[in-house]
Amino acid sequence: MSEAATGRRGRGGGGAARRAARSAVHFDNVPAIERKIPNMEMLSEEALQVIEANAETVLEEVGVNFVNNPEALARWKEAGAEIQGERVHIPRGLARKLCATAPGSFTQHARNPERSVEIGGKGLVFAPVYGPPFVRDLDGGRRYATMEDFRTFVKLGYMSKWLHHSGGTVCEPTDVPVNKRHLDMLHAHMTLSDKPFMGSVTEPSRAQDSVDMCKILFQEEELSRTYMTSLININSPLTFDDTMMGALEVYAANMQACIISPFIVGGAMAPVSVVGTLTQVLAEGLAGVAYSQLVRPGAPVIFGAFVTSIDMNSGAPTFGTPEASQILYGAGQLARRLGLPFRSGGGLCGSKLPDAQAAYETSNTLNAALLGGVNFMLHACGWLEGGLAASVEKFVLDADQLGVLHRIAGGVSHDEEAQAMDAIREVGPGGHYLGCGHTQRHFQTAFWRSEVLDNKPFETWSDEGARSSQQLAAVRVGKMLDTYQQPPLDPAIAEALAAYVARRKGEMPDAFS
Image (tube, rainbow, N blue to C red; front, side, top):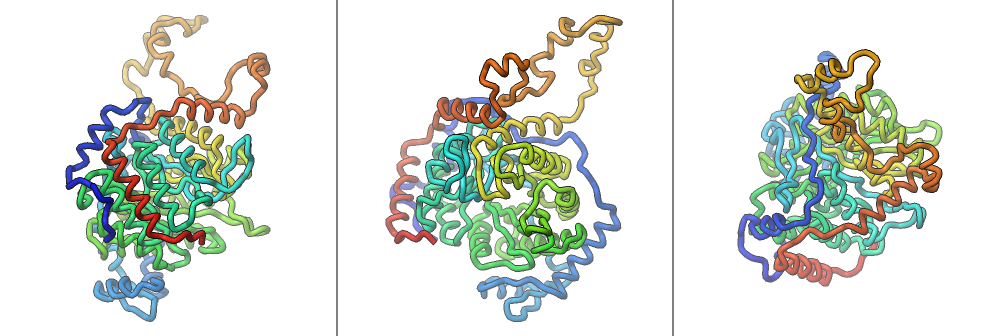
């Protein structure tokens, strides 16, 4: 376990950070969604039972690979699995039994307690795009991402009221060496935002850096609560590599949450059929969640499913397709039957620009995630080009549209005020409702209103420059960055974080691969 920064205080339960948060500059803080609408239950009970039985068969007969990880193989052997080389054959029922110790929901604590989120149950938490090596904006076009781009996205995420989470690798800053950039990214999340954030998973020592920096931020010698959620991808089909599992081991041992998620392009990394893909998703998810519980029973996890289809002509992944939605709905049902929080969805699209294709495909995926019971939505805003690029304009366009999902998730009230009988009586036949008492009471909140899109008359729109949605979004980005104010942080904590980053960077040679 690496040593935290010199000057870190003893355990204090995060009191200094919480005191600083109370003096923070406040803007609209919209809590995470609590659904008041039913989930889409697409698969029948018979279909679910078939998938569950087949997944158990896959684990027992086909098995899963744990590559370059003798410790994992030893854990599985002790638990009762059969080990053949690096292949783990898991007896029927064992993985499901191990998964039973994972919590059905958990709180991820933010340094500003008002921004802590509950992950699981009927909740839905939005987090931004994750992982693109390129960025795109109206002025600079498409280019490799830099650390300054990363900081820009963190600031935009902090100021986006419908976004509940700061995310993780919102873009991959290529101007900083691979072995050091995680330190700068974590530092940005911890200092430029006070929303929850994700830890690094690209190497176990980087996961440990994430834990150690969290200890500084929250002023704890040992982490007492869940402060990070991190993405652990499975190398589909049925392979768990030592890098991702090493990061999982660090986080689980410290009771920090992991999203255990297959990364599947249907037809290439899983069967072309919905039920066949769901069988593999469940088998992989069961094995991954079970392993986290072998590391530490009770460690918080999220059952993930990231599945796209494929263009059989070009081999390129496709997004917003009906088959992907069907898999999302089915995976949500399977996760709920396991009693686990569920991750899927996002503002996914294959478009190269924030255009009509991007809007259609993103809308399809966002709505499927809302109806499919997703609890943690990564890639909720900013995703372009199949995840290769993060767009600042699409970031704010998507973040704005997340407000629609908030409104739909709230359901429809039918109380006396919502019935509006007084308005109907007051206006009567042939009148209008613009001036009636009911309208006057509710006109400010009755209808969701975009903070980006243009709904003005043609003449006004034309006089203002006939701007496209991308141009309107660029203006919005500028206004947000101009008014950004960094949330306060205890100076001693800020100094200790900076010292840790500087010390760890000094211990490493530059490595860009």
